[in-house]
Image 1 (cartoon, each protein chain N blue to C red):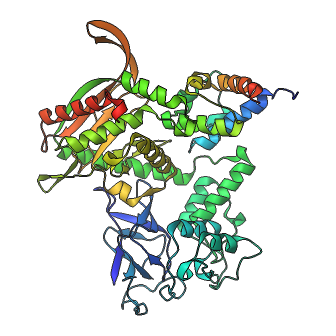
Image 2 (cartoon, rainbow over the protein chains, first blue to last red):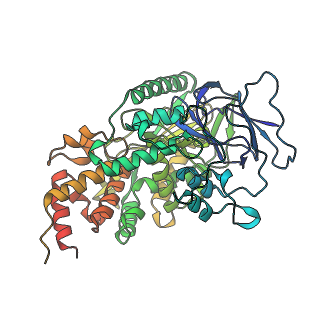
Image 3 (cartoon, helix red, strand yellow):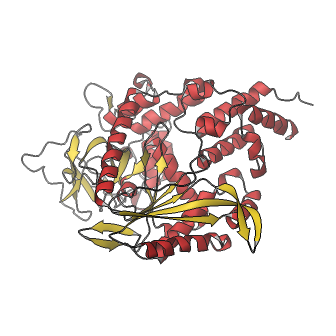
Length: 439
Length: 91
């Protein structure tokens, strides 16, 4: 029997609040499947399972504040054929209906499970038509049709519809009336139901977009407190050194313009994609800046999980990671960037994205200042900044021309590296940005 | 030949595209928007927000928007004018 515990999503996190379970007892989960939505002071975060297994007991009710490392659910081994063990004495009884026996059929693919969740279809009620009785996409669509909707085998909880705390909060933030939402077959209104109701409403009545709410104000206050605590710790513990380097971006600008000319809007690049690509490559090439300061020494990382500082509308920021960024093409980085920024702003990040950035980039963008002398996110050891791209007179071969340039900065941990290494790192970024055709 | 599309439609398309593309905009942001206000500064759109806006506008208004057209999307007024021209010339 294994435990699913409250993860630590950064050095600043001591506890989190369970908002919603995304699994039920009896569900087969694989490593990486989303188990629950947890509220941290930064954002609502989807938490993944660290292992394969069958969900046995949910130990914690949504709405409960749980310390980091404390168990929230138990999992049995995937090959465990024994029925789930009774919950250990003293631990809370599962709040949900009786645990189902472990699945006899292969578990549906994640997209199918997702679709089922969106359509409010209970997978347990479907007979799969796929190989070995596996539930397919068509099965779910079929079950989701009103006429073909099977009778739910699990009765709704006494008292009718139940609403998860996360769904409730989301409804408040999105301005959705919970009374108008039809609960899916199991009688539990979840975040996805609220979101689809919000989507429907938005398209029907575009003038009724939600305004800022009390929940959003509270979140903002908590986020400020988190930033205060992390940045104070950084300033107290990390002996920063700062370097500055101005980069000529004409090559990037020309390459990007040529490339974007023939592409539809959704496939176009922005300069940030090149800046991130060059930074990821340099972080993989120059040792000393990609990793963590831990127990008095540098814990150098071989893969680059590039943290992206995302400013949130209404204030505050989060810095989720783009995983394995040095192996992504510029196009892939662009998609990853759009995806992670969009989810950060809509409050749907994954736990791993917040847990493990190895180096962070802050890109001030077109509206920002010309340079930033950043504060490192502990336990990372470096933060790279890019200022607004501006046109400036630039000397080339004894002549003055006008070039788009950005001021690139590095804030680095002097315990881990010196200015010499930091300079090599900035030089490596510049080198890549002069050869955008290779990026 | 069809009548040219009205500018009030162009305005609605522009405002709707902003609302759909940019998470977290509040209605007042858009209600208070004057024709001459620079959209990006006023609404604090970063390059990704702007890209999402251009993408949404191109899709909902069914027009082609090139990178060279971006200066025409600078203000609400210039967006409306651009959309009006482009929709009138798009078959």
